[in-house]
Length: 275
Image (cartoon, rainbow, N blue to C red):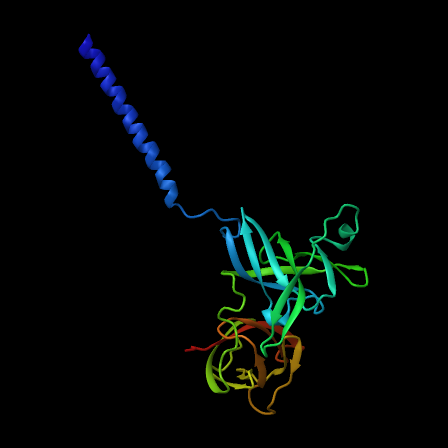
């Protein structure tokens, strides 16, 4: 009888040992799992992201190249952006009508320092804006110094891990003439641009000579400014400013190749290997 009891106890101990080993192994394995991410694949941390709006009077300060710092904490997202001045005194994550309701919690400004490419420094207002979605427009109302609320749509896109808005984007080439590789994205894919292309840097400002694969582009828009072709024969050739290297920036080309003129949105990247 004693032998039978001893055998039973031994079996019980073995089963408990196996259970403990597999259970502990499962718990230990969780340490090696990937960090939890939200529905956009973003783990807790900071990211440099693009912040765009539906109006030229409401935008990120030009010193920051349409970028802000996106913070993800427990899956929730907030972006800090520095605006162009101190004329926008409050924001609201919603519509103007909602902002005017009693009890609405307004976003208060911070005072941010921005540094322009020529070294000039300025103080502007910045805001921490809740971000409900990546790559989708959402409501963000504003009120200026005149006390009137305005509705706007904004969007946060292209988050990249990091906390330095200017990392890898500043124009750091010395004065001179360069050949840069171009990458064109967007449109139907039928149009291309010649690459490599000439880039001239003078007094810290860069001008790209861009040649399309078609003679039908009658103007381009870069940073809201319209540029006309600099040639009258052959494929359309433009001289446009470049403020960032090795990172896509938005351009618009108007083509007359269709039944009527049509503006097409593209992204253009100037690739330069800098020492």
